[in-house]
Length: 176
Image (cartoon, rainbow, N blue to C red; front, side, top):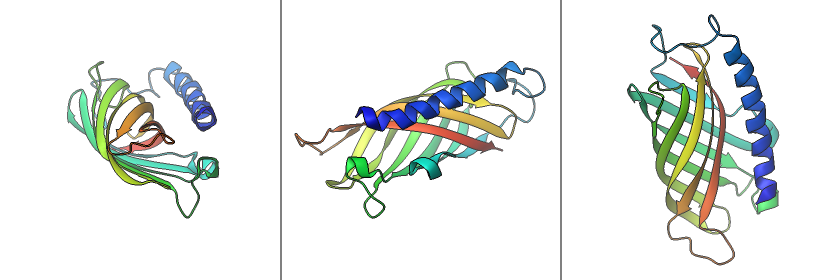
């Protein structure tokens, strides 16, 4: 389990360092709530996927001032966990996120999700979960976001395999 989190934690550390530097620029380069042209939808993907063999894409739509809804999918083929190019772990979710700060796509968000996960050795299972996210809308067209969560796989009751999986996200997106 620790080995699976190491690449993700490194990625989150990198994201945080880049996003903090961008936020410190203030004024012209950073998105300010209430400014005309703020994004109402974001299409994002994991740019580090080519290196880590972990692919993630999401579409998120603003449905209220502080609430978004969306869909996401991911693919992971790490041999270390019994996965491979021929038998990767596949995941798809529908989600709802609430931004307590009051502005969608900017700040901390708490989310719930429902979806399905295909485990290479065990089959496909429905699941329900939650996540904690952080997004930076750098401009009205550039959004950087990260998240970590847990998902309970329903019907996967084996002693050798966990019934709860960790979900990670590190995306760069296009807002429009």
